[in-house]
Amino acid sequence: MVKSKKDKKGLRSGEMNDGYSSRSILEEYAARIARQKAIPDVLDYKFPQQVAFIKDPSKQKALFCTRRSAKSYTVGLYLVQEALQNPGCNCLFIGLTRDSAKSIIWKDILTVIDRKHNLKASFNQTELAMTLANGSMIKIVGINADQNEMQKLLGRKFRLVCIDEASMYTIDVRNLVYGILGPAMVDPNFEGDRGTICLTGTASNFPRGLFYEITKGEEGGWKLFQWTAFDNPYVSRQWGEALEQIRIERPQYMETPQYKQWYLNKWVVDEDKLVYRFDLQKNLSKCLPMALYPDGWTFVLGVDTGWEDDSAFVLSGYHINDSFLYIIKCFKQKKMTFEDVALKIQEFMRDSLYAPHKIIIDGANKQGVESMRFRSAIPFEYADKQDKVTFIELCNSDLIQGKIKILDTPENRPLWEEMSGLVWVTDGDKIKYPKKEHPSLPNHLTDAFIYAWRCGYHYASIAPEKKIIKYTPEWHKQQADGIWDREREYLERRNDWPEEGSLGDLG
Picture 1: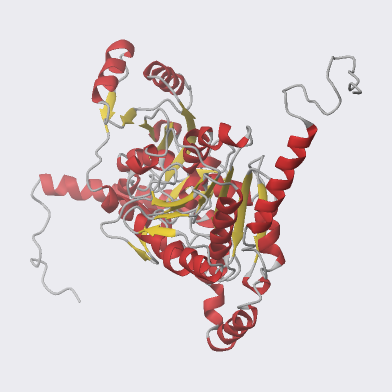
Picture 2: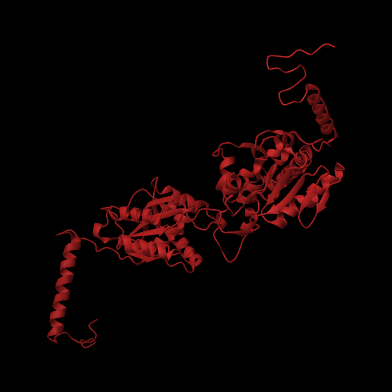
């Protein structure tokens, strides 16, 4: 009997370090290939852009498409494909609400894919869960209406998570992706291979946030995929006909934000839904008016405090002889302690030119503000936050008339950018009543601004007294009028001024 030779490590030919033979490894590999061949190919007959998105190995992907581009169906295919290829895994579809998520992907996508490929999956309507024969599960949730739903995802493990309509959430999507889901994408059952997170959506009224930054190339680490309904072979002809019909019958509609969002996939804010009616031409100014007396100014500092959100500071000024309100300086910063806030206010107070006469602060944390007052002796006044929507509309009247001027400086740019993007909460395409600012968009500088605006009395300004140059015709007339007025007063005191009508008709 011939003994097998040992190598330098003392292993016989055909043996591996961990005790497995090369034969067993080949057998396992062959079995894996056989299992893969038995998996239905749900990507058969799909258009190239869909397949490229699904098969790309990137672990952070974004899909940015027009309407009718098969975005949701692509996501459904991706979820099923990943569940089939990874037995026993968990996949997750996240929508704005449970009902909207169900209407998007449950009946018309997942059940259709199941029937078409004879997957024989079981569907739990109560849990909104699709379970495949290999033990993999696709779960559907909505998290925008209830913050608790987001917390339920903690501690779970997912192979694939797809977040639909990623630009529309009122929750912090960045925290959801990196804080909640990030740790959940590491599953030791898959040999340390990380799961994949996908953000999908269309352009909207909210040009802010993680999804927007990804589509603009401002967030690293993401692979962006884009296509339009013209790339979807099942609707491309109908899509072209619809666009042509709009061009002929409703050409004005092509100029609307909705058309540009839905049909061109452009980030455009619908001005009818803007909270503030800021206009670059009307509401920016290069400098303060130089002709005004320096001692007629009143400066007001508005302060909005926060921690995870920005603490914001807006310094405004108005003059007794000018009907405009001027925004002079702005500043914002996250994670400022009350001591930091007090130090920043004192920095404003030391300004030799624009030291504030009033400091209006958000009183939501009254205990903290009173502590600042006690320690720093800053004369705080609490902001009046009642009827905020009403006062925003009054402020808009000033903006529309150009009565508010923001100095065009780099430090003030964040304020007018915030104004240009802040919109009301909508229900579909209509503003939802009672009006509320959209909670997913920043409004801290605008809040500090509105506090300062409410204490601005620019509307009560009086015209300055006109200076008349000595010995000019206007000066001589003024002197003559003065002599006549003094003579009349003298005669009235002596009772020598005739009563009205006593001189009769002199005509």
